[in-house]
Picture 1 (cartoon, rainbow, N blue to C red):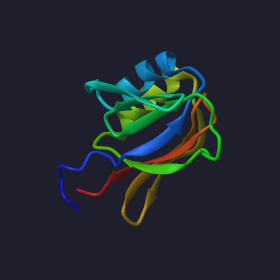
Picture 2: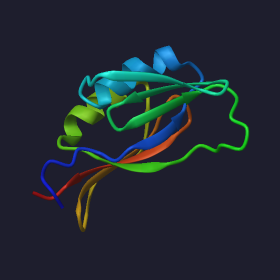
Picture 3: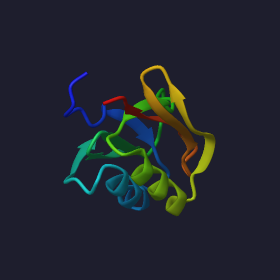
Length: 115
């Protein structure tokens, strides 16, 4: 696994795009926010996260694994955002993982790969 991989792009459905952007900017280490229209939905690409707000139609929430360099920083951001830790940091064969339920209801597994 390449050492420069930070995360994979994942879809996240949110109720309020503007409120969600600040949380996900912090989780993605304050990247540039790219906004673009898509039919009646509002979308913003924030680092590895594609935030989607608006009528969901046939879309469903997608849970995903996010690869991170520093799990401690992610846990602090999740705590400040009011996310619920579903599974505390634990060692797994390919690194250290943490599972959290975000305020929007999505559940992500954060994985800090072994060096």
